[in-house]
Image (cartoon, rainbow, N blue to C red; front, side, top):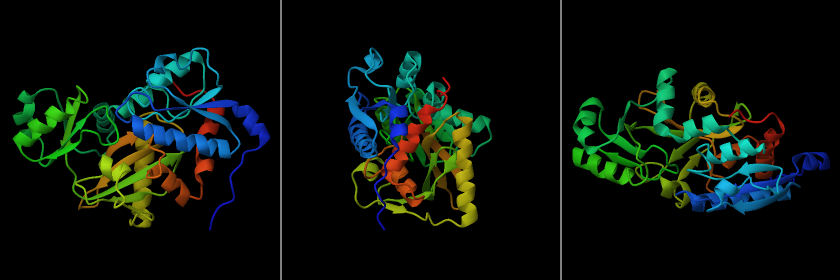
Length: 319
């Protein structure tokens, strides 16, 4: 059954003022961000918000100089927009913005440091090592169980991730990863079911089970393929889904994240859940997971983005 168009009250529109949807930018995820930003802008306008899109390619440092907006909806993915940079610029200018603050954004964007936090807090995450040079390959292979996942620590959308099982493959994957980031994360590969849990205003939305014919849920499976399977309900028992949601909320909490985001988790053959990463500015395209989960919870896309934006009327995010 289709939902009635979502509209905000005039008083709310006046309180929100003029909203800039920051999008595009200069990261490797620019094209995805442009799609997210266009979708968010359209949804906000349809809900009655005075919103406009702004591509910050080459102009990020000046985004808050003589601003023509009252608050920002951050739809920037990857470096510059998801790593605390734009959050710091907006915070310094006293401009409210959506999502997590500077520190939480920076932590969550860095997969390696995220895992140090998970490990320190006793949360389950695959065993891992930082890899800084090819000379460490033998030691890593001796200390971790193959197959392994090799990832640039500060990229998103699964860019540069490879599955490896031999030294030659590890060296080749490391060589590719360092073209994206000088910090490289190597972790044990978890064979099993993949899930993602979207979080909104302190609540976990219905979990989504992911299936793809690709080796894993990579960039193609996320944004290009029509063969990726999204399961809602996710296929877990009620108790297991609740356990998955609680683990996701805890991961979000220990990183200091706020308002909205998404947590990616694997389940191994023994039924154990393993945290992979936290996304503080997830995709908002027609292939994106947060809108799917929100829809399953009863929120249309316009209501979802307004809920995210509305949190900027509260106290400013922690720096």
